[in-house]
Length: 493
Image (cartoon, rainbow, N blue to C red):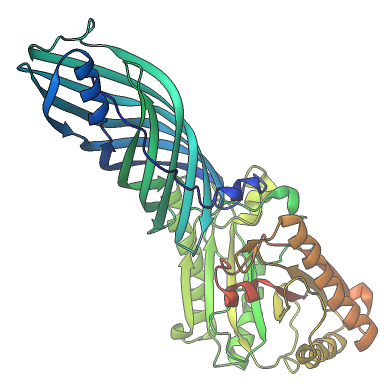
């Protein structure tokens, strides 16, 4: 008779405490699936088998065990956030056996095959951007099929081919490295508690490596609408990303809208581009990144091509009509990947059909003449974590902002507040980020009004929380860039 012995000790579940956090859907959520293969190991109770044979009047003279085999599992599940997932799958732990030789002469051979289904709760502890440790606890529903054969003096059991299905617990601990947002590799150790078909209980260990695929991982999730108030300015750009930061502060940012499936520049947009060309000529060291975007109507491939044509049409216009050196311009298409509005509405689709011209910052702009057109300029102000106090080093810059607005009475400004998603390894809730970003925008408006004499009627605020991050926030430098204020100047006819 075969017995799979209980293993000594337990397997710790590191990182599972993270399950106590909120189960809010975040950018890290999504469906996952994969396959793992490795070595399974059973502890066979040779002493127990010999004792049972001795009870039948048989003395064991030798015992050989087959306690290792190849096991595998196929799994799928849903990751709710960066800390918690549910996974289910099919496992096959392989086949194990023993052969006992006795006196009087005879042999007893036993084999067991194990397979089943499992459901696990998985706790995840990120250690770096691409590396994490995880633990799992769950249930397995296993089928155990035994087979006994005998020779000589050994009597076979009444039922030589018993089988049993039963539910037990399972535990696991592992490491995962993500090559991309969609593909990763796992190494893990799991313990399955198993009941065999003849009344014994024991543990089977599976040490495996495998691949895990996250479906839709390379496509960023849209910002949660519940936490994102509508922008106060219709032409506000999705974010300020400047190719050159250096010591420069002031940037020109342009937002152009397009008709459905078109890449031609509209007449009023050409006027806006004239203002951009004036800026580029005044500051010959600046460069521009022209970003093309679309709504989600049509295939992703067609939308990517359309967005590139839109961006290139702007580059061509600036080169041909204003003689801007093409080496200063770069066109890139993002297709439907970076929406700023809800594609389920016609208004949202119109907002997403756009080109953003993001122009590297210049050291000053007070002497730049304002042309009647719709465009924006921006200054970035960074903050300490959870803070909204204006640092002394930005006060001179805000004075330049005030002087510029006073010299151009038709100019109004929107003060955008932004915050990050992480502080170190800690994840900040969307509600806290939204509150802090609003406090930052309000603090800048109050400073311009109370200390520098700008009319409050010319200023408005917009809070975006963590919905318009310019960096993933996995480094301290990136987290600092997400804690910022953008002051957008609006020129309207």
